[in-house]
Length: 83
Image (tube, rainbow, N blue to C red; front, side, top):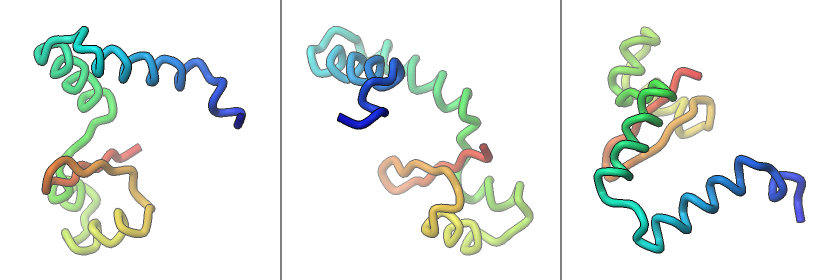
């Protein structure tokens, strides 16, 4: 067992996934969590992140692909966090 497997955050994340899988949350509940997280992490579309950083879209895409930017891809849209 790694040190990360014992962290409180990981236990919370696993419990959240269990609650979702058990159908204990409505779609509205889950969307509320997603909305909160998007705001908390200041996630913006790749194009907006590039504009804010003063670089090209392809430049930001390259930074994401290299792992130099924190990002998440949902469907065909990539969102970047400036943190």
